[in-house]
Image (cartoon, rainbow, N blue to C red; front, side):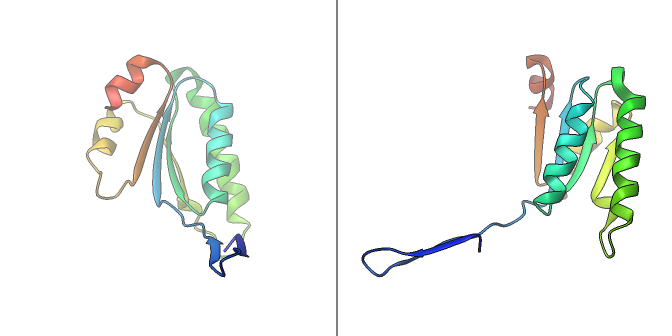
Amino acid sequence: VTYACRLDNGLDLYRVTAPIGVICMIFEARPDAAVQIASLTVKSANAVILKGGKEATHTNKALIDAIRAGLATVPGFPVDAVQLVIAREEIKTLLDLDRYIDLVIPRGSNKLVRFIQ
């Protein structure tokens, strides 16, 4: 419960947060997106599978490796909650895993969004 109050008519109002589950985020180029997405999903108790653009493959890998190393220092935290996919061919496989992946978010061009749909 992140917020609670009693309304004038005696009704109790609660705001409750709940994680979505496994989120797959596919984005183009900008490696800062990997850090932003990973931190938001971890903070909201979700797992994330990231796929960045080929232009930033090495940077994304270095950033996600650093994030995972940091998470490994947190007792009991499942480091595998943050994953990075490198190969474009793996996207089709991920999209077929809809019973395991709760939400797929494409972030980028119209072409990328149409491919994901």
